[in-house]
Image (cartoon, rainbow, N blue to C red; front, side, top):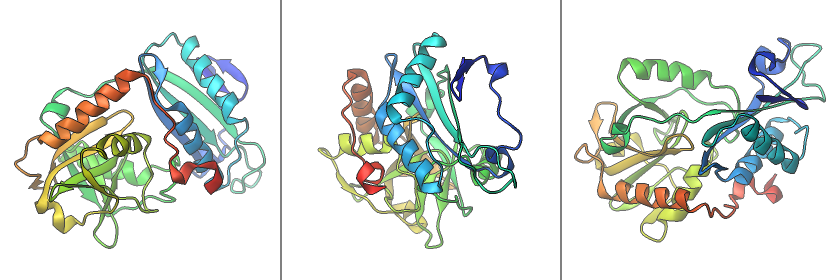
Length: 289
């Protein structure tokens, strides 16, 4: 069952107009999360990010975050899913001139069975490639994923599982659907500029890693790949996924490193605990938008 603008409907009845700006112009925002032990992981943090994304691009949420939270739980219950992927979508709504947003946006919430990546992605690591395509409005989680789709099409032909965005300064920003981390000189680096989306899993990993590793919130450059000792990406669906090759270059010895393994263990223990305090991510804090 899907939630669409006040109604719970079957998938085949979950419809919006072809004149919706999300279809005509790619104008919309969304968020994605998953469950652990049947509980939506850091749901309120995801809702705060959804609100930030919407307001940052000029979309108004049709309901309060508390009301959307209740809808998420109800959709999960209606679909009889214990472990689920959950997606929340705000579209631009219909537009008389097919360009200018009107007052009414659309809210769609749906849940579907959680799928898992192959275990060898975590035990052996993955290959990623780089691209100089850029995301528009990167601080917001918009529905405009054309650069990612184009880049990943090339990535699949090169047996890569993700694509890293590079900016004009040759800095490694983030991946198409995840955040990027790397160890260099025993320091854990991750970009924290306005050129990236701040991931919820990313924030959890920083919180869990800070007692054990020195963390620098800054980007590494492409030329520093040869100096990286370990690398990994983070996302709701990928969790903590080791990276052992970028383009043609191996990371360290080309194997999953001990520090990455330690962070994976910390994350697994955290998700199993079911105690997930609010992250209070500065960018998504209500006082900052």
